[in-house]
Length: 466
Image 1 (tube, rainbow, N blue to C red):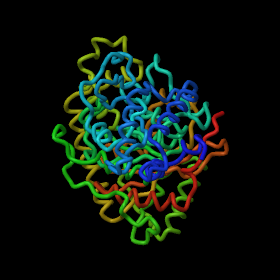
Image 2: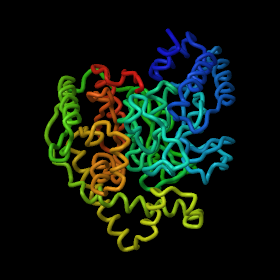
Image 3: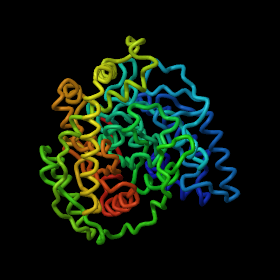
């Protein structure tokens, strides 16, 4: 197997090679670091590469695996971390030059769990400013490896690019309005936004505390399940982290889905371009072929949730940045500064109305999910938008609302969703769909994703950058 072939294996396959001692963690890590050095100057997916840390962790993993001491399902696997995840002794910028000198004194909860499970940290992955929509003007934007003219996603852009380009096997992302799911769709990888609170957020720079989710991004649903099993669960430093037991997310039968009811609302999944519509229709056919009962449902009107998301996000972001904004306004890019201005200008009564509408919407989604097991929706209404198209969208509130139509409502409600590659455009760029489940039913999403990927090939594509 060549180094390039090895770089595009999924994380669980690499782990099997490592744990059976057919592959050396040290040699694998050296190969990945060399690949990053060769390819990332063009792709800009890493904010910071950590070769000394990676090689030290790889040596420790090799020593333990030679003694048949396996710490977890991803022991020895090289990964990356979105650069808002605190890493002890390693700079954490959150895409913000104002934080270029911030070096945490402790690991965030999810980072510590991945470290304790024996993963190897290749480095910190680039992201938008403060995890909002735009990259800071002084930060180089990660380049979509499928086609440089196409959007690489936001805000976990570097995570999506690095996985797609074979520069890490898995990564942490965060999702507040779609920031795991957009870069997964854009780069043709798999991502899982868990139930809000399923993964503790202690030690991660906040965008909006009640909307932020930490979750796995990888090449397959199985990889996401393995990674979620490591990072999920209660945390003594995070009182809002859910205390429910963490299941084995890989335990379900992925060979058939005959016991699952999959809902689809054509009125919700409307306004799609032809490529996206075709991907959704094809995904429904695949799920039927796996035995699922695909039926029409009526999704609660998401209009208020979509319109209210910017306000809810803005107010909480203003709180997260009150130590530096507006006092250091000049250090901020225009996108994040605009959001902060909105948050600071929102009144208490207006925010309370948002909260009441949000609670009502979340309850209605919960009621719907009692009648089905999964909801099938697009990842976004347009397939693989270009960088130019996304730049124009930034000044169009209606266009932005259309973009987040299938992502932001589930950050507002807290329900889990998995994004799966589901096709390609005529230009050869990726298209994706989502499955949504009831709260704490991530195992159902992983199982359905594994079944879908067992009979499709979309997640196995390799980019040829143009």
